[in-house]
Image (cartoon, rainbow, N blue to C red; front, side, top):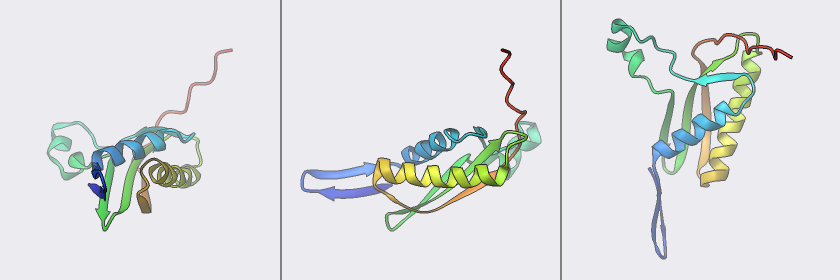
Length: 121
């Protein structure tokens, strides 16, 4: 949690809020189908460590955030380009909305989605 003391009291931004901002910023990028850990929902998957993995993780040290986002890009997209755009958008959005410095954004392509349906018209 980021806590800042002001003359009128303290201001706090929870890690969950930062993670939600990161998730929504990642979804804004063209080529991202979803933000997900990519874990399976079988009984084995539910019991494995990967099923406990969050789709967005935020680590805060000395007021600086490091973010990891697991995305599902669309098949046919240039995955590395999509990942770079996610890095940029997540970092910029968090910094603009919260004033928190983001040291790094790690992006994991955790799966692949069916291509977007072409417009019928």
